Amino acid sequence: MNLLQEAWMPVRFRDGRRDWITPAQLSNSEIVAFDADRADFNGALAQFAIGLLQTTMSAKNVLQWKRLLEVPPDESTLQSWFAPHVAAFELDGEGARFMQDFDLRAGDADPVGVSGLLIESPGENTVKNNSDHFVKRDHVRCLCGHCAGLALFTLQTNAPSGGAGNRTGLRGGGPLTTLLLANSATGRAVPLWRTLWLNVLDQAALRQIGGDGDLDESFHIFPWMAGIDRIQKAGGETAPAQVHPLHVYWGMPRRIRLDFDAVTAGPCDICGRASERRVQQYAARPQGLNYKGAWKHPLSPYYQSKEGLLPMHPQPGGFGYRHWLGWVLGMTNEKRRVEQAAVVSAFFSSQVESRLGIPLRLWAFGYDMDNMKARCWYESAMPLYDLSECDAAAQRRIRETVTDWVGGAELAGSYLRGAVKDAWFSHDARGDFSHVDASFWSRTETDFYRLLQELIHAACSSAETLAVALSERWLVLLQQQVMALFNTEWVGTGMIERQNPARIAKAHEQLRKSLYGPKLRTALALPVEAKPARKVAKSSPSKPGK
Image (tube, rainbow, N blue to C red; front, side, top):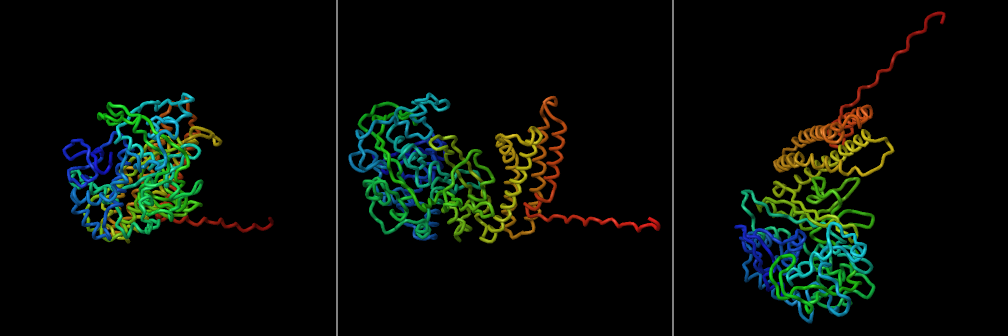
C-alpha cells in the first residue's frame, strides 16, 4: 500500500462529484477542494500535498514557480517528480513505513485501539474515570488503510502532548496553520492546484527556513527511513542543523507502528468505504524525536517571546479580524511582535505577486489544545481583497493603519467589558467576561472588513488622505456598536427588578465618557483637540480698613 501510487486522497470536483485520487492527479483543473470526512483531515491533506510538492518540485526561482502556477504539470510529470521518493511512502511492509517508527514492531508493545490516532479521542485516564462526556470512547474501531495513514499523518503533524515521553511536534502541540487560498473573482471554483502551489516556496526561499541542505540521506528528510538514533542520540534532542530543511514538512515526534496483521474486513468507520484490511490497533513507544531549537515551519506564523520566536497556536475564542494583520502582513508594536508564515511572507515580499491577478484569502486552521485535551477545532478563511496588487510602500501604510484600528478596537472592547462588569457587580467582582469580548469582536467584524477593503484600495491607489477619514469612520462605528451592545444585549434589556439603576446609570455615563474621550482617538492616531486653558480667577483688591 503506497500513498504515492494509490487513489487515497478524497477530493471534490467542479461538478460536485466526490472521488479519491492519487497525488499525481492533483494538477487536474477540475479538482477544486479536498473533501475528507473530517475537517482536520482536510487540513492535513493540504499540508501533505504542499509538503510533497515542496520536497519534489524543481522551481529554482520565482519565475519558474510562476510558470508552474499558470501552467500546472500534467499527471505524468508529477509522477516523474514523485518517483525517486516512492519508497518513503509505503504504508505497510516489513521495512520502512510512512510516518512509522523504523525499529518498532506490532508485538513490541501493548496494542492501542486505532481511535487513539484521532486527536479528540478520550485518553486512557479519561476512559478510566468515565469522564468521556462529549466524545465517547470507541466511536471509531476500524479504519481502512488509507484513513489510518491519514490519521497517522494528522497526529504526527499536530502531535499534542501525550504523557511522559510522548513528544509534541516541531511546532508544539496543536499548531496554527495559515495558507494562501486561491479565490475566484467570478464565483467559479478555482482549481485546487492553485491553492497548493501558492504555498510552495521556490528553492531560494526554501533555503531561508534553516536546516542543512547538504544532508542528503533520505532519513534526514523522512525520519521513518531509519532508526531514530541516526538523527538523535538516546535521551537527546533534535535541532534544525541535524536534518535537511525539508524535514519540517515530515516531522515524526511519535513512535508508532500500525498493526496490519490483526485486520478485519468491512466498512471503514470514517470514510465508509469497504476494505479487506481494516486497521484495528497499533503499537506505540515513548521517546520519539525531541524537537528543540529554532525550528521555523513555513506554514505557521510565529510570535516573539522571552525564549525567542515561537509558533502560534489557536486559543479559546477562535479566529477573528484582530488576527488579520499579524497573520497576513506581520506586526510589531510595544506589546507584541508577530511574523507571518514564511509562505505568506515570501508571496507578499516578492515582485511577482502583482502580476498574478489572483484574488486571495487566508485559510487559518488548527486545534485549540489544553495539553492532551482537544478543546476545539478552529477554521476560518479571511479576505485579502486586492492586497496582492499593493507594493511594499502601500503594504506598510496598511500595516500602520490596521495596527491602530485593532489597538483602538481592543481599547473599546475593554471599555465595554468594564462597563458591563460595573453595571452588574461591585468593583471587587471576579469572573470570566470573555463572552462580552466575543460579542464585541463579532459585532464589529463586518464593519472592519468593509473598511479594510476600502483602505487596501486607497493604499494601492496612493490615496493616503483617505486613511484618516476611514479611521474616523472606524471610531464612530466602534462607539455605536459598543453603546448598542451595552444598551440592548448586556445591560439595558434585563429585568428592572433585578438591576441596580443607579449603578447602571453610572456605568453608562462612564462608558460614554471613555468612548468619546481623547484616549480612544489617540489609540486610532486621530487628532485630539487641545483642552482650553483654565482661566485663573483674578483676586479682588482689598478694601481700605480691612
